[in-house]
Length: 483
Image (tube, rainbow, N blue to C red; front, top):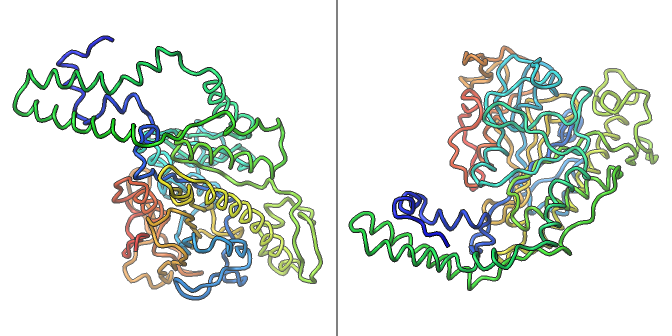
C-alpha cells in the first residue's frame, strides 16, 4: 500500500478517527452497536389529521389518561408508543395549503407571501431556511429518503415540502418503481457482484495498517502532536476491538423487497414505500425519511349518519371540496361529509399502525426493536380539512426511552383579542417583524411548528436552540419532550 506521509496524516487527525470513518460510512458496519442511531421519519397527511373541537373530534382527559377522537381510534393499538402534541400554529395568511406546504417542515415561510417564483411550479413561497429533514440528514451525514404517495396539487407533483440551505426544493420519488430503481436495485447489484478479493483484503487490513503508521509517527514527534497521536491510536484500538467482538448486521439479497409493478394500487404503493423505509433504517443506509400521503384513496368505506355503509366520495365535487371541506354552511350533508372524512383519516391511521407494528417486530443492532430507535412524526399542512392552521396536531411515535410516551400534550393557548404580550405573527423576507391583526375566532396556540421541529431535531442529536424564522421562536413556554 501507499503510505501516508507525516504532514498529511497529522492534518487528518482533527476529527480523531477520521481516517477510519472515511472507510466505513455506517456506525452499524463499524460495530458500534451499544448505542444504535435514531432514525426519523416525517409523514405528512394532506388536509391534516382532523382534530376539530367544533365537530367533537378532539382529545379529552389528562396527559397520561386521555381518549382519542373518533378519527384516530385506530391508534389505540399503539397508544403507549405515542405522544400527541395537540396544537401548534403554522402559517396564518394566504391559501392555507399553498403557504403551508413550504412551511410544514421549515417554519421559515416569509410573512405575507403566497409565492409565485419562476424556479418552482405553483403558488408556493420559497422559505428562508432549510427543512428539518435536511438538517437532520446533514448532521447524520446520511441521505434522506423522500417519497410521495400522490401528495400533489393541481400544479405540482409532489408538493414542495423539503428544502436545502440554498433555498432549493428537494423533490422526492413520486412512484414506488422509481424509488426502487434508484435505491434498492443498486443494493441488489452490489450484493450479486461483491467486491474483489483485493478490496476485501485491503478492508480487513485497514486497522493494522493505520495502527502501524500511527505508532511509527508517534516515535518521531513529541509534545502536543504525540498526545494527539496517542489519543488517535487509543480510539483506533477500541474501534478495532468492537469490530472483532460485535456481530455485523449483514444485508443479503433475501432482505431486499421485490420490484413494485409499474402502476401499483394506492394501497400497495404505500406498502412498497414502507418496505423501502424499513430496509433503509434497518441497514443504516438512511437516517431520515419523508413520506407524503395525498388524495390517492378512492374507495374507502365509511358509515353515514343513518348507520349505512358507504364507499368513497358520493358527491359531485372532488374530494378536496366535497369531503375535506366538510363544514359547508347550511348543508344537510355536513355530518356525512365529516363522517366520510373521519374514515378517510382512519384508513391512513391503520396503515401507520401496521408499519409501526412491523418496526416493533424488527430487531435492531443493539438488541432493541427498530421502533425503539425510530421516531415517526405525523403532521400535515393544515390541522384539519377546514384549513385550520391555528392548532395543528403533531404526533410522535416510537423513540424508545428517549422520551416518555403514552401522552397527550395540550398546547397552551392565548385568546386573539387578549394576547397579554404573546407574539403572534411572523417576519417578511426583508426581516421586518409583522404581528398578526387577527382578533377573532378560536384561540391561538402559543407554540409554533418551529417549537415541534426544534424538539424533534434535539431528539435526533442536532444541537438546535431555535429553528426557522426568528419570530417563530418566541414561545414563552418551551416544548420539552423529554420530561
